Image 1 (spheres, rainbow, N blue to C red):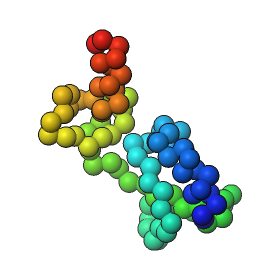
Image 2 (image 1 turned 90 degrees about the vertical axis):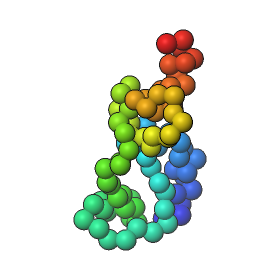
Image 3 (image 1 turned 60 degrees about the vertical axis):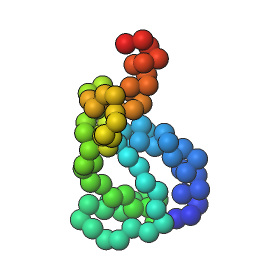
Length: 88
């Protein structure tokens, strides 16, 4: 529902950490599938899950899409930035 998307979209960048997943997409419609959870508490809310096709970060365990020019193919960009900031 639009009301819920309006509320959670404010936190879109943090949702993957809140839900402990690799990626969150907010959509207006979701077709039926065996991987869809339909909320009994929040009418109209559906959640689709699937395994991320990317690489598992060695540091935070989130999956990410590797880039060909990545400095570090074992860690996601967020962890690379944190490690560089920490001087590691």
